[in-house]
Image (cartoon, rainbow, N blue to C red):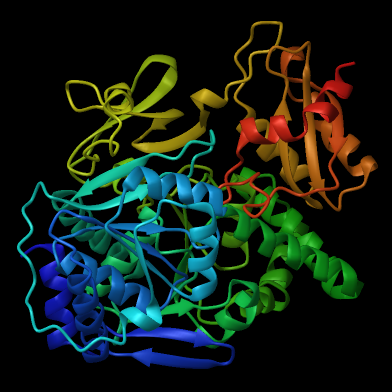
Length: 542
């Protein structure tokens, strides 16, 4: 039984367990398996009337909802190739992706999205809104047969270099991945009476996010979805999840927000927190004294539980992916009673390569490989991966595919890594290496992570200095120059001369996906940021 057959069987036979729940403000709105099947059959009829044949591409552009899931399943059920797109992406970038994918049909969430796309994508295909697609009479056709090597989806990469590529994933890729994620999440979550309470806010158009969706529907287990990314605190309080998938940027904001709130309140609570946190760090290194133990004990009884209650009273753990989480932040969540398990993967690896095993967790590392995959370290400490999770190539880009996949099936991830006891540590992206005039190869990510730890009021930062006399750093957020200088001074005392930061620039404009300086999943678009701040960077080196 393939992954799609299993999901449809669960929708039919276990409708309450396969439920999708949307959070609307303070209310929960659920659609059980029978309701999802009805939605699927309606949008499938619409797809068929549009003349879509098996193997055609159908693009999907909308925010997360039960209707998004139904539309995605309907596309797959017809034997078409689903092309999910990010609804907050720049319209010009969306137009480039759509031109590349050449879909037979584009289904959008609303008229506003349709308008923005048609303005940027003039030579467009048929476009239908959700209201139109779900207004049809249900189709009574069964699932179209899908072979193991059939492409089921094309997912466009984030495009940190500015150019996105369509990653082709087959049924076999997904068939391999879902049992693996079910097994590893089961290890972390353990057994309970009743289903897990899982909350989800990351867009389903991303590979790991879609894998999480399909994993829950395959178990089956209900999934609660955010409908308003600007109101996550309220939604999480309503959802009361046991766990949810995160990106490091969100976890860093939670940690910094807690610290800022405690500083604002001051008093005994702040003192207990600060002494407890200092004692916890000493305990990790074995330098704790009797008085440290007392301070930590008080914080564990009086402060840390209240912090955990504010973050999520039912939270048992969190999963973090997309980018490495700093060791300090991972240990901070552990300190307040919420373990964070890290995952690593790319779209080209069907979302996941490694995921923490609860018995092998090492803070600052991104877990151990899923069963059935081979990992090795190649030239320049680049991670190479081979296994049933490796993609089928880039859509319409043979040369790029050959550059990423060698003849023996090894995928070149472009990530510089260290592996110890199977545990993976991401050093940085090879293409991000900064080579100043000294000729040294410098991975910017570890220095940037250290800066963010030392300067918590900074929102983000980026190191520059390629082909320049020295390193400099761009900083955004509320940090004052004195905070920035202090962080730089500390870093410079810890690193060799060629890694010292000599200049800084406080940018008034932050980095965001909306202004094109971050990818949709919050990664730095380094080349674009450098172009955007070219004049300011040139001034640093004048």
